[in-house]
Image 1: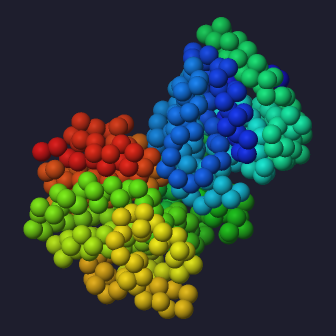
Image 2: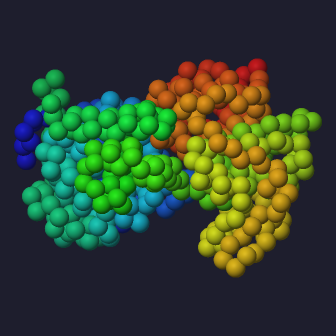
Length: 198
Length: 274
């Protein structure tokens, strides 16, 4: 699972149905000093409640919060796309939001985040598709790989909802397929390894 | 030069052509969402690459108009984010009530739904006859729609429910007449709002505003342009004037940070210090 440059600058995660459970498991395992930024699109209903980030933040050592427009991207923070906004990454390591029309019936959409992450971070982008009941993220994941980045998909047989991981693997056959436990372990090892190079 | 850098040169060249030909400057728009919109137009125009748009936009104004529409399309509706409207009724209206006369600027009003939403709430608070409402946008087509005050009735049930959630006291249908599959707002509401062209990127100050509302427009600007426009708002606002941004937009990263008090963090409502 080595990429050409060897260094990951940003992790992007797309997750839908069954996501709260998966994210709870994943994020509670990460240490507070995790050395990479993580941006997450979790499909959610369009209201102004930010409980998802609040709950995840409460249970995790690592900081989890909803993104505010033009917020700078820092290592060791988990950024969640706010409800009813697309989340994009801009050159210069900051986020922007948009209220453009829904993509794959979703706002935020995983494809939107992944495509901009691929564009900005190229081979330094690591994209992960977790459980979900639709096919959002499959196109974005392909763009990440086309730009030289790394693709990981949760093993559909172990995901709470298999459709989204299955669609992602169909569109990106080169994606590495792992269980949630293996993904978690990989992220911790990756962050440790990169930090030791600094 | 890497491919992505070349792609940036391509977009810059397109934007430069548009600026020089039509005097619309998009160079300080947030680049990632701008690229998505340009890609959206490319698909509609059956083109593959942004550079192919250059000759078409230069020589065919209709293509430019479609570009402008693609960029200014906003997802808007009556009482979008009811909790915001509820908040201004509770926290701003009581202050406006103490003024004999006040001015409101709704910048980036798109097709006008939120301007009408606000006018209705002002009317119910007995404040509409004291208010002068300016609602501006940089897309003349949107302004024309807003002036007509005619909207599709397709989402009327959502509008009614959002109206009530926003603190509406009567029946939303009191304010419009039904025309088959459309609704038309009453003349009183239409007369209360002055819809006008204004481009935040290049046009000047709107004087002495007691309340400025600009929601979900900033997200499309880069940080420098946001600062520029916030400064424009600051110069347009009266002392102790109110400024309302979109829920996820903030003045926290700008120079205005210390000049305003936060009235509501979650609804991005600020008040200029005296």
